[in-house]
Amino acid sequence: MKQNKRISNTPKYLFAEIDKKKAASIARGVDLIDLSIGDPDQPTPKYIIDSMKKALDDPSTHNYPPYEGTKDFRTAVSKWYKKRFNVDLDPESEVMSLIGSKEGIAHMIFALIDPGDVSLVPDPSYPVYKVCTILAGGTPHMLPLKKENGFLPDLDSIDAQTLKKAKLMFINYPNNPTSATASREFLEKAVKFCKKNDIILCSDLAYSEVCFGNYAAESILQIPGAKDIAVEFHSLSKTFNMTGWRIGMAVGSKDAIKALAIIKTNVDSGAFKAIQKAAIDALNGPEGFTKGMNLIYEKRMKAMIDGLNSIGWKLDHTKATFYVWVPVPKGYTSASFCEVLLEKCGVLVVPGSGYGESGEGYVRFCITADESRIKEAIQRIKSEGIRGDQLKALKN
Image (cartoon, rainbow, N blue to C red; front, side, top):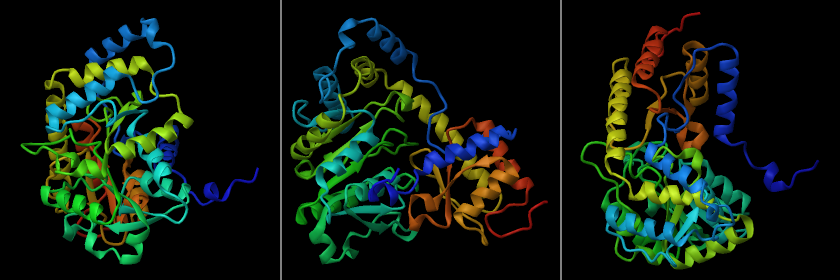
């Protein structure tokens, strides 16, 4: 079979390849410590599962759902945004259900990018932004995220010719993979920049509720005037340990939501109504669950960062996300360091190069594993003589 050019030029999806490495290691009998993919290891809360069980017994959930999501779900989203961010949303025109935020991000690109158009993509970043731009026939213009800039893109560095072709710009704070956060000043600048250049600003807010200490992430829609040009993608996956449920939402610009609806009505038939019912109860549920999960993550994060710092790294403590963005020791590439950790230590992490060229020289550790396993991973790395401050000979 001859594939079309778009498929032929599309790289294999990073996490599909990670899954293959994981399966191969387990098949060899490795006691694998998986610190790769940001998939919560704790179960979905019981009250959400109970809601789903009840909804499954309701025959009214068994038929096709509304394409844009049920009215009750969209209303619950608008109320949650008001409570969490003090943002007003019209559930009729400014909210749409998604089969997970990944699907919505991909379809938004197809809704707005024509061949020859440009999307402004952070580098490193979630691979979907770049890959789906290519699949839509557009050109991703990569914006390097550098440590010296707080892993924020330099918007002033974009040339005028690129700006003329730009239709979309992606931001993602709290950030995957760097765990960086964005200031109100940066968010205001991003909105002003996109308004000036007639660019739709796509904010991926998947990690807004995974925050530590007194830090609380902001929505781009909290910036005055943002709804004119911004659409935000959010998901229940990380907030409520619902990654496999596939339920999320796009909110914001009426025009962007309307364009997304044209794609979705022609491509999918909406999210299962029983899942939407459970998601409503999740959004309306007790705040204590998220706070309790974040306390667990905060302890794990401290164990991870303190542990790596004890063997030569100099990492700052993060404010949000599951991730630790770790420079590789001298003499390694991102990929070769991942191979060493897997083969020598039985520890699976993700190469930063998989998130873009600017990710080279880093690997991403994830804390979705028990604290005891995180500490064991650090001990295994230490036992092999691997340090962050220098290259040492490894044991044979």
